[in-house]
Amino acid sequence: MSTPIRWGILGTGSIAKQFARGLAAIAQDATLVAVGSRTAASADAFAKEFGAKRAHATYEALARDAEVDAIYIATPHPMHRDNALLCIDAGKAVLCEKPFTVNAAEAEEVIARARAKGVFLMEAMWTRFLPAIAQTRQWIAEGAIGEPRMVTADFGFRAGFDPKSRLFAPALAGGALLDVGVYTIALASMVFGPQPTAISAHAHLGESGVDEQTAVTLAYAGGRLASLTCAVRTNTPQAARIDGTEGSIEIPGFWHTQKAILHAGGKDTVAEKPFIGNGYSHQAIEVAACLRAKRTESAVIPWSESIAIMRIMDDVRRHIGLRYPFENAAKAQGK
Ligand SMILES: NC(=O)c1ccc[n+]([C@@H]2O[C@H](COP(=O)([O-])OP(=O)(O)OC[C@H]3O[C@@H](n4cnc5c(N)ncnc54)[C@H](OP(=O)(O)O)[C@@H]3O)[C@@H](O)[C@H]2O)c1
Image (cartoon, rainbow, N blue to C red; front, top):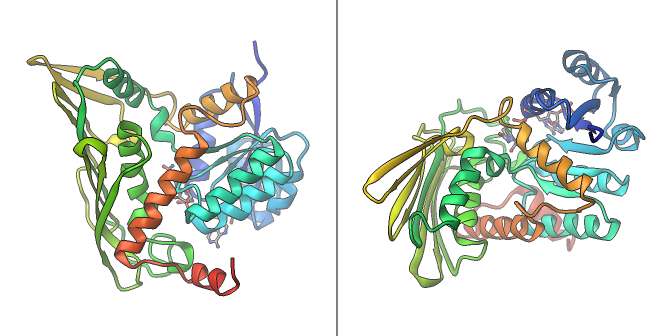
């Protein structure tokens, strides 16, 4: 039997806690050994709650921890780049939350560093590893719906407006697109491949200047289309549908689904596909498999696709006129 991958978690916010619970469900594959926070108190509390052996009061100390194989980055979007570079430079495998970075230039930089250092790196697009989504891929590959022609997906929820929060603050790269729209784009990318031929988008930029709701159309070769919406001030069904020439696949609650429904040949086939733990476990299982196989990237969400997804979001942001303050500062400095 293989030894479990020794994990460190960087950041102690809400998704960090979910991931720690996800690791606890796969003891054969993973063990949480350390956490790193900007404060000792938060690191201590997290380590106590989730049974990590060591609590580091800085991210740097976590990156230096010799007993850690892989680090999960769970900070707000604009920190992903620096946090990932820190861990890669320390020789750690990295699983980095979505959106992978804030823009494609940052994604390219982080991936180039992982390539140069020969270190594993993967975007934590956890949905893609869920058994119901794997079933969806299998149905498509088998031709169960013929040729996929249209993808429709939405991910909206109503958050209370707080201009200082991660969801609404421009300095924290707030807005619906990067937070939840990324799931809809990743789904379209999974079905049609990462390279649309044309992109159009409209959005409502709210009081704090970030997109509160966005509609994106991606056009692909041969007339295939994805129609995607996302929101942080409106609840939506959060459903996805893939329509093909011979049938359709419906995925209720697609970003955290345990079910997919195939409508084809005049009948409905419901695939009930429970996930392990809270669902976040599957991406950690993939990291373990890749590390054991000595791979530096996952074939399920390869580096080229993470870059392509960021490029699509850059393009959407150009269409809707959304640029973050730190991007303007970086441009002024010639970065
Ligand atoms: N996969 C999913 O289902 C999912 C769900 C939610 C979020 N996410 C992603 O995970 C990332 C974190 O989201 P979250 O909801 O967990 O955020 P959160 O609850 O605000 O936690 C973020 C953590 O990052 C650290 N941090 C470092 N610099 C910070 C700063 N300037 N401001 C605030 N926190 C800072 C903090 O940890 P310390 O104080 O310990 O340093 C904080 O607890 C985002 O990129 C988001 O897109 C993914």
